[in-house]
Length: 191
Image (cartoon, rainbow, N blue to C red; front, side):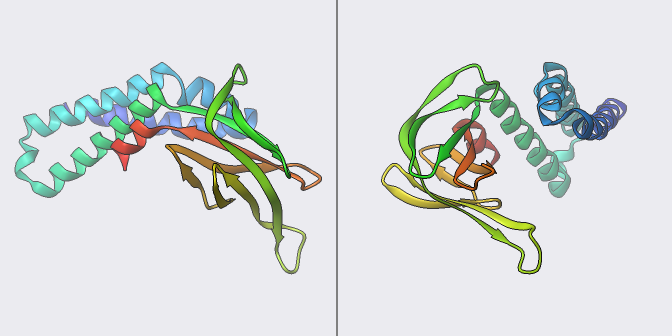
């Protein structure tokens, strides 16, 4: 039983290391489609989770509180990730300053999906490092529904179950692309 669990863990580590290299060469989209978003990768995580649960039961780990809680926490995180895999909707929205939209493009560029609220890019700004031309932050000032908010590289915004992330910006610095993630079930389990 322990061999299966560690075998699955080693296989996952090898895949993750390989995926990092593949991402550098072919890009995020390829790795997302053929590794992270693939059924075989989900099944590999499932094997690890089943082996961990079986190990908890067979070795009576529930008697050792710390080890039991650690294994349970990992299983809950994997459950949340699986629910996200099955139910989450992802995509992006491109806005120019002053523009208001209530749709976004699906992750695979196959559909325009509705949002239950309007998003308006009020202002986009880039903060540069004082002594170089290197950006330190990209900031989108938005009106989401009736609320004003600020999204930056390290600051997301959540609204009605949707999470908005700063993704990129236009070369003329007058537009912003936001990642849209709708995952109320997976987030509820994991967090």
